[in-house]
Structure formats: structure tokens, C-alpha cells
Image (cartoon, rainbow, N blue to C red; front, side, top):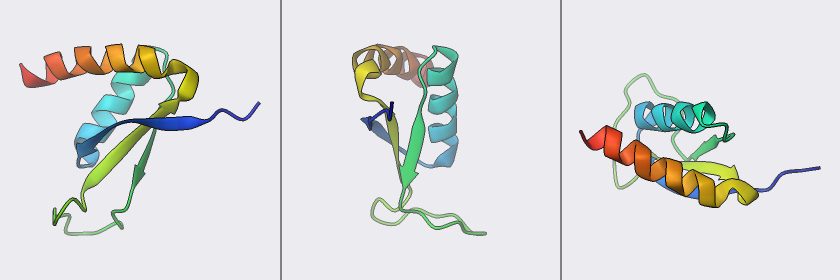
Length: 77
């Protein structure tokens, strides 16, 4: 069965994206990232170019939203 991945949220930069994906995977939720940023030796942000979209399986979206709230609580501390 081909799982449909849908957007959960968008974050700024690869570091936060990888942290969130790791957090989701630790909770048993597969996650992927989608970005328009080409690889670069000199990463920078210009008008949303560093935005990374986090995708999760559609059937796990409600659970992923709960996990995202917990992640944001921990990230903001």
C-alpha cells in the first residue's frame, strides 16, 4: 500500500527539520522533509527559501499534531 504523506508544518532550516523528524520518529511516526533549498556551501535565508516542510502519513496526522505541540513546548524552553 502506498502511504500518502501530507504536510504537518514548516520550519526554518535543516537543523530544526532534522530535530523534528527525529522527535516524530521517536514517537513512531514516519516523517519526510520537502524543501526548495538547493544544497549550498553557504546556507542562507532569503524570503522563505530555507523553509522546510515536514510531511507525515495522512492517517497519522492527528497524532503527529499532538507530538508537534510537545516538540514546540520542549523547543521553546
